[in-house]
Image 1 (cartoon, rainbow, N blue to C red):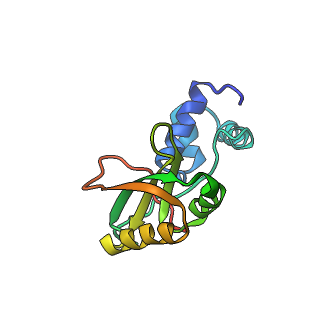
Image 2 (cartoon, rainbow, N blue to C red; image 1 turned 90 degrees about the vertical axis):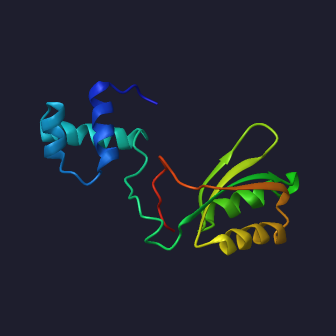
Length: 149
């Protein structure tokens, strides 16, 4: 990964706040020409510093107000299948391989508690779970953008 400078960091921060803002606006705020900012953005994308431009959808507007945080211990033999399942399941918004007594921390969006229960049942039926522990988020002070699948 190539080093980035303070101007790159400012550009990344501005685009993280609003990726649709005109590059002329970004250029004016960082003190460069629009073409120089465009070149920097292209370089940052090519180098993999900027991985994608995305949106942040409202979970409530999508009918997914419930956020469940599920600690999962996966049966060792099922790990490759679980990883494929997690990468494509529409209810999973985040999945992290973690250290400690659990294998993964999975964030699931659902329309209600019955959706969380259905998700857990699906994982049990597929033979992934050794054990799990589920917590429900009461509110979120800061959360990752929701990108619906």
